[in-house]
Image (cartoon, rainbow, N blue to C red; front, side, top):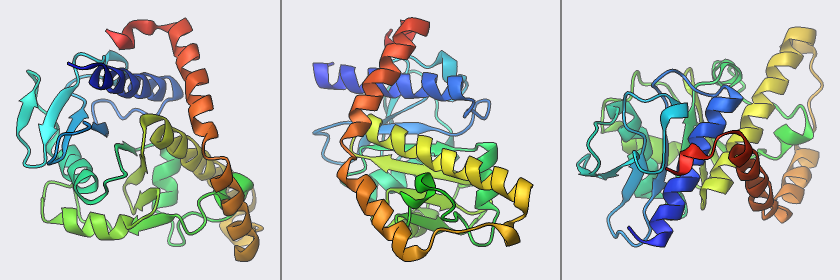
Length: 243
């Protein structure tokens, strides 16, 4: 294993541990994946099925190719997770990391007809940068991959209707921060709806939301600064993710 793969494994394992800390886990389900560099045909790291997020370590991540064959690791993967993650890795060269969650707020917004609303500057970051994919049942059908790819397009996130959230990034840091704030935007919408009702919510105008989204693009590099802060926090709490 070269140093680049070792670092990628540690970063992905860290993302799992942080997600557990933030309450994003859904027992054994949902997955984070990272594409291995220089692998030609997509090969990616993903969690072995059967482990909770706080049990994932750098060494127990498995490697799977686009055909579903396990390249390394002595555990199986979740077929539905493979369908979704392989679809993105196959279609997007820049999507080195893919994060998929089933959080309460994310699933609530995924069930809303209008999807994510521009309710806050956090929400506005995602204006015209989120795709939507209609629910087709549990993602066991590999034919759905082409439709997932079309729904995601060039966006940095995807709302899987009646299902959950998905984020992509060139690094684990990017995908994790996108998911953190996408989920936060959903939490804001859930709270606002409970307080005012969706019909009485004040929405940021589209033109202003577009401006705010552009402002966030200019500071996207700060995701890596925040990621280092997350890693320091995790190091203080439990550094065993690196094992």
